[in-house]
Image 1 (cartoon, helix red, strand yellow):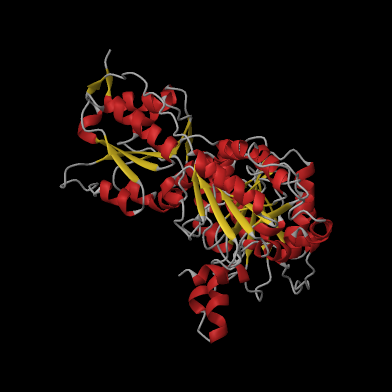
Image 2 (cartoon, one colour):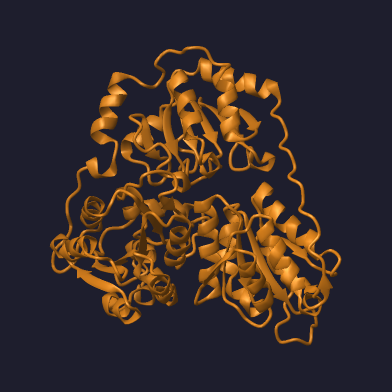
Length: 541
């Protein structure tokens, strides 16, 4: 019995490396989705295509595999566009499998190729039965090897044609790094007296190689936000560079005479619009994408290559060095001021509202160390990002390249599917919680033992604190208080309302219990504290 184009495409996508697909199934993507499941992929049904897109994005980030998103033609794709845009800006390896109405008379017709291009994704189309297998395989290879979002269009009038699965597409070998670039990097490391490594998402899985090289040249270790946790446990770990950096980390990075970005864009967030790099510091960028070198800021040296292999090779070129930045004074400072919770603050809680700093520190103490934190966007976002520790670089999922509010819950779901052995923690603001509330049912249906923390300030807090000081009316960005605990219980969650740290006893009881239902923490947080880290974001508007 011959197979159809839709069936062949689904089979080849799985055979080429896709093991999980997220989506909302309609008539146009029904057959291809079933074919992927039949081929061995796990299918996760979302309640909205926007949530499905972000789940797939987070899964790919946390699993280091190509993920798939499956959507209906036209409206299914447009519903998913915000999540697709976030993934495209983040260079997530993702294949968007979408049906396509090619007749302009169809209610479902939109220019899907133009939509993909508009948000930074790459478009491919299965035009004939003969090229179905090759195009599907090429979509996965392109997503994987070039870290691109590929929108794979399956025209409705082609899907039912008979087709053959063909042969697997061979893997293309990587290109060798020019030896002179490695020598120049080794020379820069040998000459530096205060080197700092800043590792990004492209450095995941390269901790041992980077630490060995840092030990050799006396470098301090920092990460971008998306790689938070990469150097957890090292005595020389500065944690996150940029808007979430501790005062001590910012001071030490600014004092560096050499900054090496490893798989890191060195963008305005990671470098605080360039203010974290001294004017006379040497800046080096190592990335496997030639287009990334110097794209965000000028660099003195760009090395195109895989982070791990470059670090391992350069280690053999650098002789034994002086202590570099690793002095007794720096070690002592990191011991006493290396974490945000080490910084004193005046607790502003009271009158039925909890200080978000005190809340998050208490949660950090309560929650198991083996956790996976996902953070939505908003005024609150720095508190979980700065005060919740994570065990490693796969313990923090940060979908913030597009700065869209509402992606946090779906991010936590996709990450949890990728890393099932950890407690998923979704940190949301009240605005993002309501935007993504449809996926609360998905959490319950999947049986995820998730903790959802809603930092409820009854407002779009970023706008309140940005425009309020200038006397603007704020009625458009303030709202009545929402009973998130009741909403969560309606979806099958356990829930506690927190107005002081003492109210967290319900969290302690849930952690001690069977955890048969996920938990939502409805935290009514103080509303007068502006988020200085979002002042950085507004600079980029």
